[in-house]
Image (tube, rainbow, N blue to C red; front, side, top):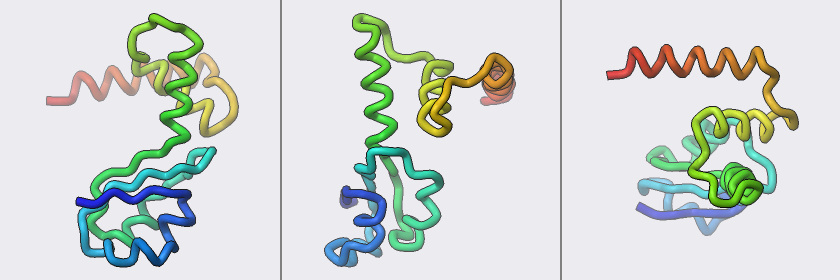
Length: 112
């Protein structure tokens, strides 16, 4: 397994990563904003990609924790709200948050 990192464009096109096309890959994207649906493009270059991390999501989680020191790890609802903010630039409205909670509970009940 190899780790590659850089901006989305670098990981997709930098010739220094050509030699990893047949390897199991963990990619870390350093872009300041989240990249939507990067796996399809990355999978074309690295068919055996196993893991993807986006620094933008990690920064958002770190910022949320920094706002409330001593707070335990974010709840799933907090994670969803941070994800929604990152994707849309705004907090989820009450209806969206309620729908997420409902879907989460449904999935939790049905999971083995």
